[in-house]
Image (cartoon, rainbow, N blue to C red):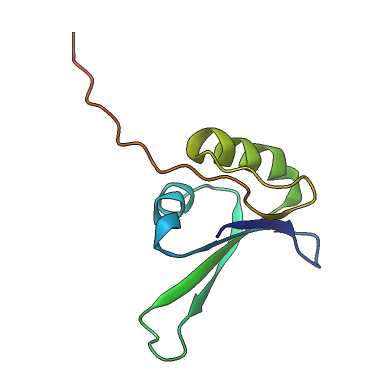
Length: 98
């Protein structure tokens, strides 16, 4: 389950865990405002990633909330925490060229 919060140092963090959130990570990983990414790996198998936490400046919170809501149907409580909704990603339909 995705979690959005302000951490103890005042930074905005988005934690994505599980295969269901891979599409979110694939879209947001190149967002230029990330300060760093923290990867949590399985202690039993270092090749397996358990979660990824992306960290940004809190000034980008409204922008990130908008991206998550409109792009993925994810909403979070105003004070942070786990997402309250998440929709299954929609496969885009091919457009006809004119």
